[in-house]
Image (cartoon, rainbow, N blue to C red; front, side, top):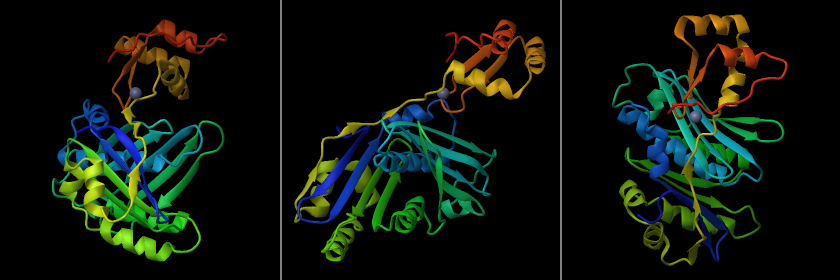
Length: 290
Ligand SMILES: [Zn+2]
């Protein structure tokens, strides 16, 4: 499918409505390939990645958007991150046995869903997403309603191989909005999961809105990319003392840390540890193993 690993904006010529469509294929699979997640986790992570890609399309500065979930249904953390350059990564931490048929509501029971905006410069902002509705998309629609005061319709679909996100949103403009939105949202609501997963963007839009003039903007690519580094991993070890790190290295040959997102292993031997705590600081090497 030619629309894979892209994000594309939708414009309605005569209506105060906009849209965004994203399809994740390689970006989704590369994020998950090094993890042995059960299908129910693969599906929800795919939906979260598609949602993060769509939400990040509105970032107006360098930084990242993080969609994060925790729940008492065995989920310690689900996380999907997307940068302003549409670089995605995702991670799941969960208790051993997740019921294969568990619903999103059960998974999230007693938990929290949050959106964090993390600019490269400046302060982080975190907003909580109300757990209203049976699906992730229901909750995010409620978030748009409360936080942006914009009527939105979000469709998310994932079959374990690819993930699709489709957002329709009223344009913040004067006049005509109610009718335009009612019209487009009624048509949008008829979309089926199979259509989202199987049709290309042009065909999908034609099927839904062929009586309204709507156009697809030039697509932009979405990729999997983890921005972990040896240097940053070394920094993250500084919560321990030099002595503690040398003790681990003595016992295990080296201090080894694996990135939770991409599973890159970073090894720090005695010389590295000493350098980390020296006045001149730690010089990043390149001995990461994949
Ligand atoms: Zn990584």
